[in-house]
Image (tube, rainbow, N blue to C red):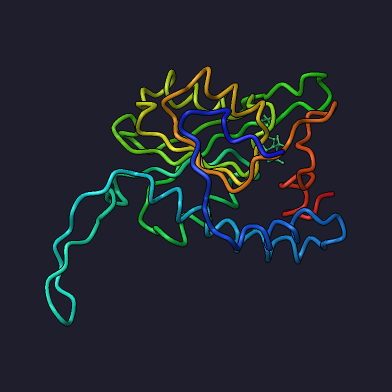
Length: 221
Ligand code: PRP
């Protein structure tokens, strides 16, 4: 049963296409080449939906047939897309296809798979100057225990002064446990995801899930 009540600011990427794309991505018999193909299609949808959650202003334009009151989002130069390396990089690239002028930051965090709690390790971070005043789109396709996302948010908020209200976490697939952890630690950070799965298994993998997103995308299974 999908649990969407675990976070106050959870936004589901509403595309009907996710059902089709995720079936291919979840299938263990889908090759890495095909996984990349379907994941890129799904990530583009999530990236659009996540970017659309930033504040908008009214934009008065002229269509070929007359005036129109439309919407404009934050300027790309006021936005920093931050990936949690390695899997976050692939979602980041979908964002950059949409907004080539956005700033980019990187945080290298890896789950310690030898630790029983799969605790995250922070290795490196790099951000553009002035990030504390920017909107931030944090990119990571998987949210399992929430440890990696919390570590990344600590670096952004506590380490670099970013306002949590200006951060959106773009995600592909998550577990209720990770949502609850984020809700407790960073209730002001909005999450945009495509899928909320049932639970974590004893190895802290999302179930039913799709395996390890990075391994399947980078063919390192
Ligand atoms: C995966 C994933 C998240 C993290 C989620 O990364 O991309 O960063 O695990 O798990 P958590 O919520 O329990 O922290 P991993 O550390 O496997 O590295 P990878 O991106 O290189 O595959």
